[in-house]
Length: 119
Image 1 (spheres, one colour):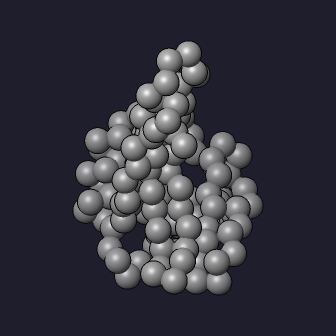
Image 2 (tube, helix red, strand yellow):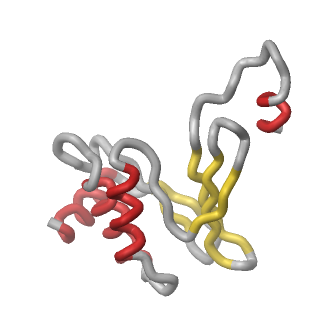
């Protein structure tokens, strides 16, 4: 669908990149979709300011057999690579999905607990 819009004149271009995560019969899945309509599959990825530092950090830290807590810690530490200011449960959101295929957003208190563990 997105590619059709990139090939037609007079249509509004998509101006965002997305990271889309899910869990299927093959395990966890992560895709990045860019404004051109291209998409890529990743094991771990980052976008935005200081993306190169964040991706370098993920390359060193990510493993296929990470437990949930370590994955959340890694996400927080990756955010810190490019975050200006103080990170707290009030200014970031973290969503998790597991083998039960149920998505949930961590509460600010849960995020603050994880932040306390990595600081």
